[in-house]
Length: 273
Image (cartoon, rainbow, N blue to C red; front, side, top):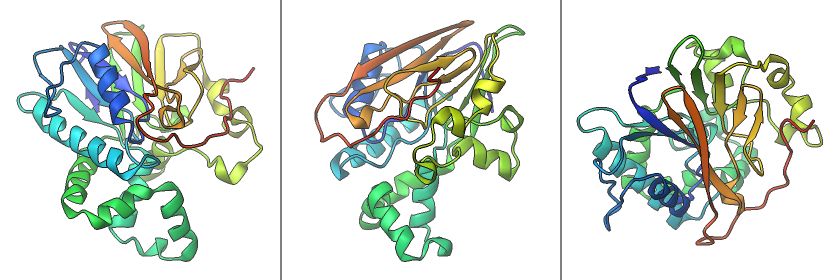
């Protein structure tokens, strides 16, 4: 979907249950949040875009807090005009399949993966109210958003990196590629630049940016017009965002707040050349 170029946006990378970091990042960018976790809509003119994967990997308490915060403020900020957007991540997509009892996932290997990688599904299977909220957020999510300011400046937003031929397309193959790139877990030992060579090959020295998350990096990784803003908050690092304002692009981040145990990660660096 094309979004208005009259608005300013804060685009937040993979949250994975880091609710404390999300709230701090929003406050750092002018939003006020009351004691009931409601964002004061008048405190900032920015609209919020979450780039996908707001669930999984965190503990149950933080995951529940994250879903509840997003749900409340999705309704709060979208009351009169849309100011809160969600992009679908591969973790939301897989958790949806699990809680909807996708028969293709009914085997011991997938159950093992659910416990290890998609722990939100176990939480939602126990909490029907939280499940309903998640399903509403899932069904309100976009696959891609595009900010097309002028002939010199635009920003395309997807959860995962993908080839240019898939961007902003709505067929099933394109949707799948914008949600999830080639599996790192199935290609261990292969560098991201060799696993996803099209990113560097298709990168151009222009201001038509493609911003994505999904790849859990130590810092924002940028090569020409390709930018990854997943900076591994749940791994104890930082939660980052891109700020789009007219024809300008800025970045900001906050440190992991140590209010839950971080997950473990061995980094596979993107644009490592």
